[in-house]
Length: 306
Ligand code: ATP
Image 1: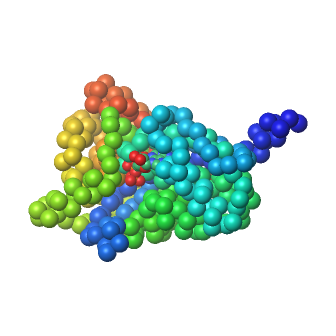
Image 2 (image 1 turned 180 degrees about the horizontal axis):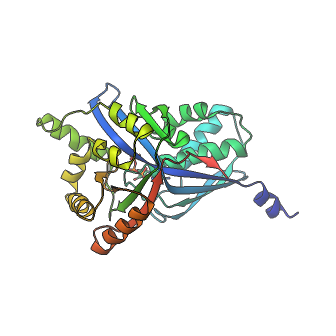
Image 3 (image 1 turned 90 degrees about the vertical axis):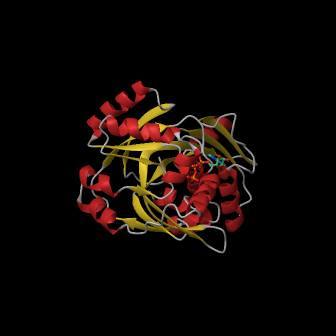
């Protein structure tokens, strides 16, 4: 075997889903600067992939979304996650991490968190670090609120600042149209817009997730649809009014419900089933209101090796 063939055969591959928030309740700001959250997460079938190989130093490359735009150094969450794992477990080896991104950048789908989760999982395997999901999640939580969920996947209740995860029983599969906006929205910017709205007395905290959690277990798309909620939606639309048009188009075209994904600007449209999702996606595509229109389903499993 050539050296290259040995490196290839020891490659570790990880796949990590995007997250959406079926409910996103944003509370007050804690003394540490984080907002208190109560959120219901769902992992959906839009994936980033990582291929990790042995290397003397820690380095990464990137293809797909964000190529030529995202830094590939210590500012990238992939490198930060791998470094945090190495430091915690005394690993001195490096890794070559190839990232293929399909999750749109800064779209409210936690792409960066997904990549960090994938790097934690894949590097742990590459370096032979014996850790469970909870230990990886604890490292991830120090880097980003959504990283623990990206490791667990499925449906989950998120509390704290989103990093405390309680997995929820899985019921019906939901089918989504994901309307990817042209351009990005910075999550901190949307939080500060929300703070401004609240200071002006507009919008309140929605913390009740009980009915949604029940319907996710026993119901279907029709019963889940009226229970979807995002406290950040008004702030995202305030900063990017074009989001409202995408929502209007989706609802006019037959979506059961429409909502902003996380901090936006991605819009999620709930369909009745897979067939309906494809038909709806086709109609939304024709309207030309989104850069890209994907279909996806959830819940799916979190970061996994394959
Ligand atoms: P969230 O909803 O988790 O706040 P998002 O989905 O809106 O995030 P991301 O795609 O996670 O947005 O990117 C947020 C920012 O994180 C990017 O603008 C970028 O500056 C930074 N970042 C660092 N590493 C990555 C990465 N591997 N992929 C994406 N973004 C990254």
